[in-house]
Image 1 (cartoon, rainbow, N blue to C red):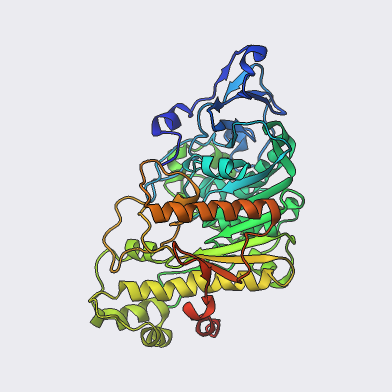
Image 2: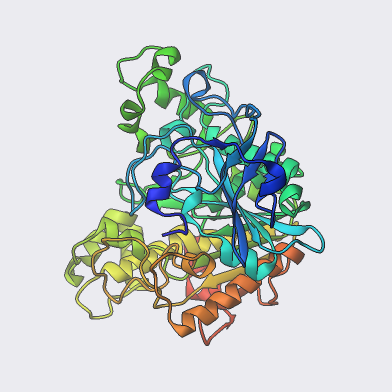
Length: 501
């Protein structure tokens, strides 16, 4: 998927320091000195890449479920030609399984030429539902070279390793967010050595990465670590359906609830010392149960949705957007088999509750293709993603500059393997904009998609430099050959969904 291959990822599981004479190796900017030691990256005619740079000590042993600790300085020159490893996780949506807890590393990509002045910095936080994904899944050369910028992609602890809690455990439920802030502090200390401007940092994220940006907007500890923010398909009030009719789950959880959840684990342990000694494999068995960052914590004192709605956020220019058909991806996973149109009312009642389900069927009528999954996906897109995205724009926009977009390209190639057929196709599904911002190896793009990619790259880069993506519409529709204002509230029936809260 990314420039770094699977074989390289496997090689990156071990650390390496290479003994290279600095005077001879420092040609074309291949070696950069960080505050903990020198690193040697890869230089081509267009770009420089540095991978596997530690920004915190290994979170293993006594450091498991501890806020990130300082890196021990190293001698010589560290090999940075390999990518950051994949943090421990179970396989999801094509992302590989990993049992690597020593994963707090980042990657840096810059243009090949020396900058005339320090470059703007873009720090990317990956998505994956807080349980999967990695920094090295994103080849950032397009963003860096098209925008004369420095791009940093960061790892953070996931699932049970990043968002576990236990009574009396400092940092419970928010270790992954603390990792992200440690990476942002590393940027402040070191990015000038890579040609970046520490005073001009934009933090960007998609899905769980976008939710993470919401968290940092609400976190006192993030003050001064970034001056602009991009939230992609991760509105602060995102809520997804549960197994109960009409039930909704948000992605934020009180620390007290996470601690109770941790104390209720039945893994043969009765205290945190025993849990810290368990093998990684034992914890991966409960990995997905810890997918909600905790508030009432040092890193995150307040629920980011509440912070958004009450103005208790950092006030920085923010770009907030979503894809037009977010839920087709998840509907395809949850409902791999067709839902016959006569069964639509019953399925809507099961998802939304009986009363609201009947209203949904009336507002999202069947189109006669024999399969109601696309109608169900449209309703879920509007309720769970689009209208919360509108709310985030409206609430944040009361106190700071906010720009909006909707990614609407209907023919994007599927980046997640093994998806079943879906009525009408997946269209602009969740994460479908990513192949236009990052180079996904082996994924072909049409001429129209490449043209749209150029538009997105330019807009994201302009926002990173100026806080303005270059359009005046409250929400810009991003679709090849049809870029222009979107009637977002009408298209997604947000007046209707606003009445349901």
